[in-house]
Length: 304
Image 1 (cartoon, one colour):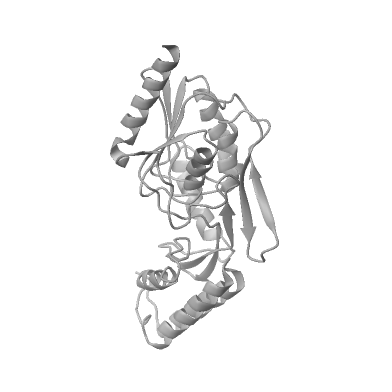
Image 2 (cartoon, rainbow, N blue to C red; image 1 turned 45 degrees about the vertical axis):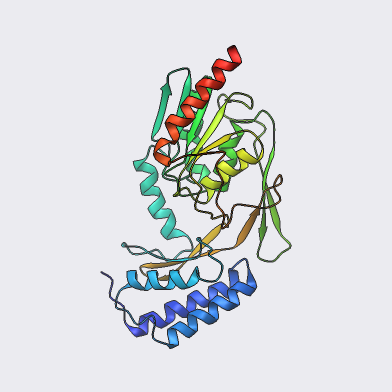
């Protein structure tokens, strides 16, 4: 357990409050949250002796104003590098190596239905392009495809676009990101060309979700659903649509603060706070069998 003292707690909370004011995508909420953190600090609410407990208490307060699940004070058991985002990248790399690059399972089920599991994250594209291209090319020959993101907690929006590129026939506008200053924005599009073979934009496609599916994994499900390209099967997702950055505020603590918000070009909104609503609602445990059955029926009807 990492021991804290009041002299180490105060700068953590003060720096987190200032980062909110400087970077949070919603300035008015940032002011309310910074005031709340400083008030709670003065009241002694953060007088705890472990970094892990401080992270829990501050995270509860950070999410109390608008429920933004990307707003967190994250505890790391190992020492956090000081460079911005380095803590998350170091932990990510270990998971990447342990999960075959985020593609731990490719399976062919009865009836020509392929299953591709993407978990635990959609890793940075410069890491993940090679394993994803190999897996997506492999399943391109299937008659139907099930993407399983039930255990996926987010990742890189560029990787979302990369995956979508294999599931569409032409370059398509997927998302628009608006940033803190209210003037800059960036559009996300599928790619005109991909390494390997495309599954394409016409064969049956299903995306499995759970109550733990989060962030970029939600975007993958939401983008494909809004385009009418995929049927989402499973549970309502967690509801986190804001891209975030991380700042080291203590050797074992990282302040996670959203710096932008996503707007879908079809719906004109996003999944923040509501989650992605499945087209076919069932438990996460039943989602794969349900999607497989739906795919088999659709393929049988098509060959009639």
